[in-house]
Amino acid sequence: MDGSSYRGSSSVDMYLPNYKLGKTLGIGSFGKVKIAEHALTRHKVAIKILNRRKIKNMEMEEKVRREIKILRLFMHPHIIRLYEVIETPTDIYVVMEYVKSGELFDYIVEKGRLQEDEARNFFQQIISGVEYCHRNMVVHRDLKPENLLLDSKWNVKIADFGLSNIMRDGHFLKTSCGSPNYAAPEVISGKLYAGPEVDVWSCGVILYALLCGTLPFDDENIPNLFKKIKGGIYTLPSHLSPGARDLIPRMLVVDPMKRMTIPEIRQHPWFQARLPRYLAVPPPDTMQQAKKIDEEILQEVIKMGFDRNQLIESLRNRMQNEATVAYYLLLDNRFRVSNGYLGAEFQETMECAFNGMHQNEPSSPAGGHRLPGFMDYQGMGLKSQFLVERKWALGLQVKFLCSLGVSNGRMLRANF
Image (tube, rainbow, N blue to C red; front, side, top):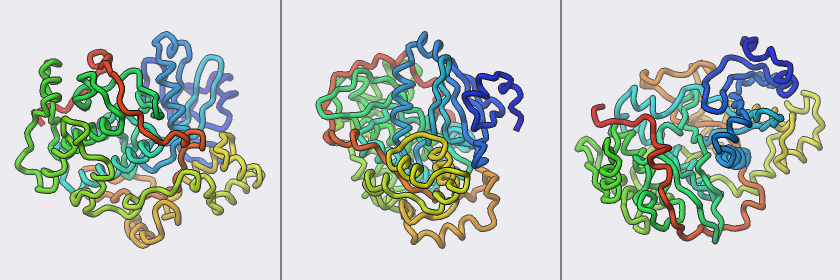
């Protein structure tokens, strides 16, 4: 790939010697995202280049730090991966998983309402990722199709944790921003809430959008929109199956105390249908995962010239260095069932699913044939200090400060 447009600067070469930078994928208000190739493994990554001065001027330092803090600890097949963060006096380089197929939002816009099996597959992956966040005491608070990315195999990757917060017993969230259409009634009303239930509401709105191609709560007038959300006023189209017609209203319950929980969603018959085994079994304990090291990948990294003992020590302590970045890139890009998170029972299914497919080419979203979301993965969770406080914070006073200023720029409208 041609990186000449950006690699003319010797400072970039100096700070990113392990990457070959390519074209710009996008430009934001305080930086840009470029595709790059990791020199040792040859795998593609996306590098966010964030300008420190712009971040500070826009008072976005806390948001950026929060996302980095959370993502560098998370390791789940349906949450965007962060491989390393390189800080310089002028910029912050965030090396992330390259997600090829765009946003779930655009996928829904292109296809309209999805077939039930396809919608369920996306939904199962989303719930798995959200459950992982909650188990590690993180609530996302801004779940919407724009923040759900799709990789080349059309697997969901939850992104944008800038509004998330690590929840600890007795600690209250200070603000609650996000997109009004996906926000729970208690959030826009400024009432008490614990955290997980606001993500469940958003997941209910997302499931409705997947199955209907429109939003359950929508109005050009913000006060009217809030009135609909707080009243739980929406209609269920007649084309929905009985299972979906039962599940959605249980998630979109105005009273958060009566709203369905993630464990209850997991047990619902509609969710259970066609559930891949790797999503049916919760990931192992995070501390056990941290100890689990893949010997085959380990050997590949050692062949690159790294010391075995130092690499093992770095992996167990979740240290960021050249060797661990190479290890995780190789691990995440290997297409086979592991004995860890997925379980060996699906090896035959995986082999059948991948037979005849070009691994480097995405299947067409309009083609109808799509992998059912199987991925190779061995999860890893938060370091021990983030696992000490296990209770949810019981409620907080919220002011919906960002409902008008940081609202959803693009919305699914009723004319789909």
